[in-house]
Image (tube, rainbow, N blue to C red):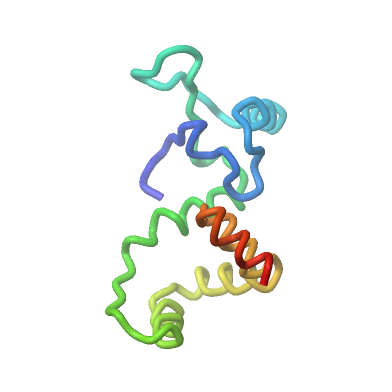
Length: 125
């Protein structure tokens, strides 16, 4: 992760964090995350230091941010999964596989902000 400070709105719902600003700010206070006032923002906008965030949140953000590094040609889905697996580092592979085994594919899609209509269709059938 290249950013040293993460805005509140970027953290909402990430890696099991609360899904509201109030809940997120309360958790940050309780856990003692290092914060500062967000430059150029109106009101009480703050951002939190990368190193003070919980490890699961840092891992989730790292996976989101590094996704652009992977290049895939158009191909059959199984080949795509093999190529994704090949391009991940060993640590990333372990993290993704353990997440999918623990949480399931549907929860993975929910955490990736997949469209609600698609998720509802998956739930039905």
